[in-house]
Amino acid sequence: MWFRKGSVIYSRSIIQRIRGTMDWIFIAFIVAGLVVSPIIAATNCPICGGGHPDLEVQVNDVRVLSVQWLASQQNIDGSWPSLNTMNAILGLQLADLSWLADQDDDTISLTTSRLEYELMTYLLPWRAECRAPVKDLTLSAGRLAQYMLALQSTCISTSDFYGVDLHRVMRRFLRESDSFSNFFAYSFGILSQCSSNVTISRKALRRLKDGDSRSDPCASQFALDPSGHSIDILSLQVMAMVCARNQAIELNIRRWDLVLDARVQCIISDQLDNGSFRNNTITTALAVQALTSAEADQGSWECVDAVQWLLTRQIDGDFGGVASTAQIIPFLNCNNFGSLRLEAVECPETAETVPPTIQLTDETVTFDIQVKINDDVESYTVTTIEGENLYFGMIRLADSNSDFTFETSESAFGESLDGINGVFKDATASLYWTIRVGDLDTSAPKGIEGLQPSDGELYIFVLQDFSTK
View (tube, one colour):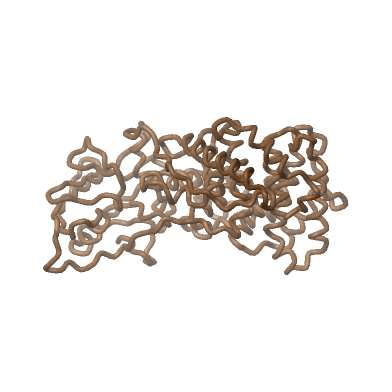
């Protein structure tokens, strides 16, 4: 049984539903690099409240460089160095809301597949244990929140992530007092909820407001740390409080705005004469994001000086590595880590997934499909309308031949092949369906929706073991 758009027939196993054009992992062996979109549109970003046209031009120029530089750091397997895949994607999307949508189909699929694959490697062992406590999840609550924000920024559902409601998981984390090591991570947890307009519990919001000390809004376990960690935490708390403000008001949580204003003032009081905060690039960028998100009075701090100082800290768009650049560049587009609640991310359009009836006047092509599992090979012939993709051909074959079945999983970026003839890919065993064209030595350059069969062509689906690669 295969999936159509709107189908309710899904595989029961989470493993069977891993999206991924990790079926395309062979791209890592045949592609020398990824394509970076050459054109990044200018944005209407009123830096420091507007009225600084020269500065806005400088900021946009650096934004373009930074987006290009960070995108260029993507590995050929779709990841970014040092476990920063989710941070890089989130930073890129906040710096350029159409960044992913503007990429070619291969880059879109590889990027989103890698993001989903990484998260599933944490979720699969945990989901295998029925009703396992969240503390058994080998992914910290803060990193889960960052994955959730990255998924949201790429139009991938976080309420039904292959059968897992990530918001429900996050609510369980937020309920447990020892799930977060500090309020930097806790604030990301709140942001992952409010950015999707998910209801946050009163207890979680009060904990965000109270912070490390109910009597001192600026208190932090890193208060005496000169590196700026206390300002980083305050900045994330401010972004989270701004994002969740409407919910806090509806729940009548007392002193919300008073605490928010106090934290804003604590951040402002730490600005140095050169415009920076603690002479730290990340700290300064987070402070700028927090203060602009809270709409702090421009007369109470030196926004222009802070931005100009930040612009001097990059070389060709690089602010000191992937992790640093990913955290810094949202402000170049007047965004912050709470902006997804308000911003409309541009999602690639998906094509209609029900092929039309073949008419007598239609030009058609006839091609062959083989399914190879170990030493067993099944062969089929199918006719489609000229110009249709391989996916439509597979649908037509399944409709006309009961011996051929397949299942795919649907996302905002198209269909991913999960199983053929009842045999499914298995992430834990590194088994994935791959596509060959003509012979076993020629890997297909695209997935099932990107390939357009020609008359007489042969497509071979191979269940391949990548554990030895």
